[in-house]
Length: 189
Image (cartoon, rainbow, N blue to C red; front, side, top):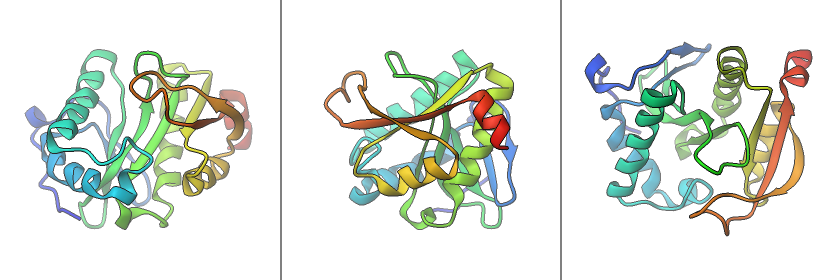
């Protein structure tokens, strides 16, 4: 996993910085490009988050996230491990055109999986989305074969609502839509 230098304000998309016990969630920065490329070169890691991608595709993804922060005021956060400063992946609110709902999703490097980071970061992102974006529900689009992500959704208190449909170019990918209402989230918390 690549170590990151702290981005200059001019090199980072505008937006809030959230902290959990072990993580810093911040808008994406130019310094995230190389570790993001590394994550998307790993076939096992990339399997359920769009597949292996060339650096040119990763660049468009990074710029899309930064653009969403700039134009909408929200998108996925870059996940930084507090203790080491390592970029661990991206997670948070994501609703591209045609998306099946208001999603908080996650994609972490292989080295970051199995440590509870997805649940920890997604909890902070869901709180932030409900408190700051006015969302009334949150979903997670999860491939039926992605049992680790399904377990994260369950730990978050989401229920499997059944098959869903993604917009192009992902329209042929099978997904189950997991989710819960803001009221259910707050009652559980």
